Amino acid sequence: MGTAAQSRISSGTRTAVLVSADVAFRERLRRALAELRWQVRETTGGAETLACLEASPAEAVVLDSWLPDLEIQEFVTEFRRVHPDVDLVMADASEADGSEVRGPRRNEVLLALRRAQATDGAIWNTAPRTIEAGGFRERGGSQETAAARPAECATTAGRAAEETFAGPAVAAGDAAPWGTGLPEFVGSHPAMLEVSRRIRLVAPRATPVLIEGPTGSGKELVARALHRLSPRATRRMVALNCAAIPEGLLEAELFGHTRGAFTGAVDNRAGRIEAAHGGTLFLDEIGEMPLGLQAKLLRFLETGELQRVGNNDSIRVDVRIVAATHRPLAKLVKEGTFRADLYYRLAVFLIRTPALAGREEDVGTLIGHFLAKMGKSSPAKQISEAAQARLVQHGWPGNVRELEHVLERAWILAEDRPRIDAGEIEFDEES
Ligand SMILES: Nc1ncnc2c1ncn2[C@@H]1O[C@H](COP(=O)(O)OP(=O)(O)OP(=O)(O)O)[C@@H](O)[C@H]1O
Ligand SMILES: [Mg+2]
Image 1 (tube, rainbow, N blue to C red):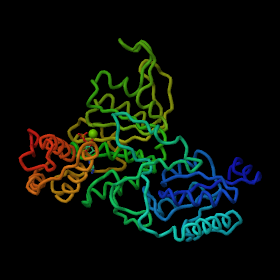
Image 2: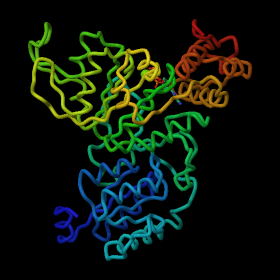
Image 3: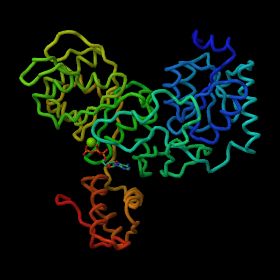
């Protein structure tokens, strides 16, 4: 236990972190603990909790029996490894991993839990409960900060304004099956659920991740979910599309440059890698990176240090790398356009986003999802069976993005009629 934590104990105040996606539960327990002179911080998920404890220590963690991001056992294992001295109390008062020792602190938390329960009959295992979206935000532009989230976990219960998500129907009290999809991923095809499972497993770590999948299949969505569920979520995710920037400018864009390093370099400028310090760097279309630059990126990945263009001073930067490609990198390695050593560095953990073709059920669910989304900003519309059949039969070379666009077009073509008909379904030219 750190000195800060010790001094809090000696002054009679202790801190507990309440981990639950259920705002009403946290509120009751916060009050009960405050009566026993505990300070309380609140988090909604496992990754956020680990980041919260890293930012400042606590004496106890009260853990709900379900987390929106991690399996309980995964969280407990990681938590025990990093914080062996912090009391871990399960909200249902079960033993977390059999190593709990009853001490006065732990007894107080258990007492608070009983009191919180008494104020609400049964707070556990009562379904359905409202789940907050945790840190989930709709994706913004190509570069996003997590500024909407508190820099540290909230110290009060003033988080009631958080969104509730209308995603897959999962209640916090339910035992979440291993294959439950993350809220931003619509679709229950096994290949889609595997994407969520892999994200959950690797997000809390600093391991590099390579995302492979055809165009419009959700690669960027995966990158954002990895960042959201990582302990880096309170810092930035910086994205760079390697295919969108001319070859000559890409190096300075990644590594930064000094004033006068080349024509047009009028100032010293940090690159995208530096901008992502402490957070996540998303290298999109990594397969398009020129070979010369691949060597420089590899050097950075090996040493954790970089030099701005025009300067030999080394700068240490801590980033988690997530790369994406629609062209299988292993094939590019064989063809000689991608370095094998860089490939092995990036592809430590591979996530494949599946094509939409062959996932008929998911097409149906996605149609409902996008119609509901469009119905938020204009009067709702239904879809005719014939129109739906046309959509399900289509081959979807542009995957989920194409489906979204086809529906948007049909919505406009249906004018003010409350139903989209088959005649309004127009596919993209190349489909
Ligand atoms: N499983 C999904 N559930 C809901 N929306 C999805 C899903 N997959 C993709 N989308 C949506 O489809 C659109 C395209 O996704 P995204 O940009 O992540 O694809 P991508 O693989 O990065 O495409 P590209 O290769 O063209 O860059 C986005 O609006 C995204 O939100
Ligand atoms: Mg993309």
